[in-house]
Image 1 (cartoon, rainbow, N blue to C red):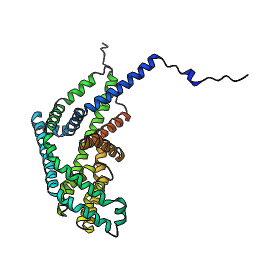
Image 2: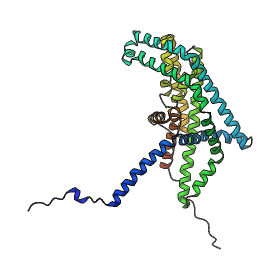
Image 3: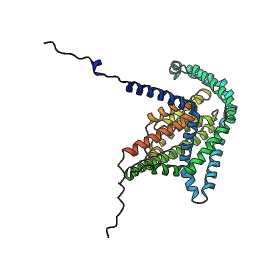
Image 4: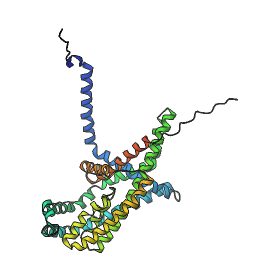
Length: 353
């Protein structure tokens, strides 16, 4: 007798409920995407305020031991605004003074590197002169608009400052209120344990990473000034920002400074600068980064680079900064969830008398 065969299509039953569910999911996805795109800036402000408040909270709590909490918040915000303003003024000043100079001499320096007998072939294969010319053109255009953009975004900075103050004042209460919504005491204790452990490790990682980035940026700025490298403040800022990537951040961030020094001054001076940055990278690998990991958690370079690139793609420089911070928070939550569970909450004592 011939073997009976059944079609796979005959086993699949598509009901009206299934079609309706698929339609609802598609519509919900489209609406969610539209909401996220339309509210990208407010969502970005809120996330930036949460990250800033998490970073500033330990400093506020330390100062609050010696003064009123409100006064501590005001002092920390003023110091932060002053530091950021000073750095931005230095960047704008250097770019305004050096952008025309870099625009004129950077392509010539790249051409000299292409003509050098030692590095010429690799530079020509990389099309160094063409890439440097495009880069300095972009730098000059952006630097001419940077001050105007900074002034036009004063409202954004004010909103973020207000949200940061709100998070510093009411963030802990909001967290406790969210935890009280969980009725089961054992589950609530577990969730609170994960949240507290993840948030504490995240705070320690942010504070430690920003502190070492600032230290590397200051050292780089001093060395670049001593070697008379053009535009030392933006170049040092690049080193400080990319130094957050473990194991290779300092060297990668130093590449623009090395190229400018080699092309505009000499390969010998660039070698001195390379030795300094290699020394900073060694200190980063063997001293500062292990200390940060010991106090918080380990975050690999691949995740940070991916978060920086995706964040920059979505929201430019701010997205790169806060996107990497949120990636670290995700790792902290996963680390806390995978750790040993918190002790069970004991049952309330009863009167046996």
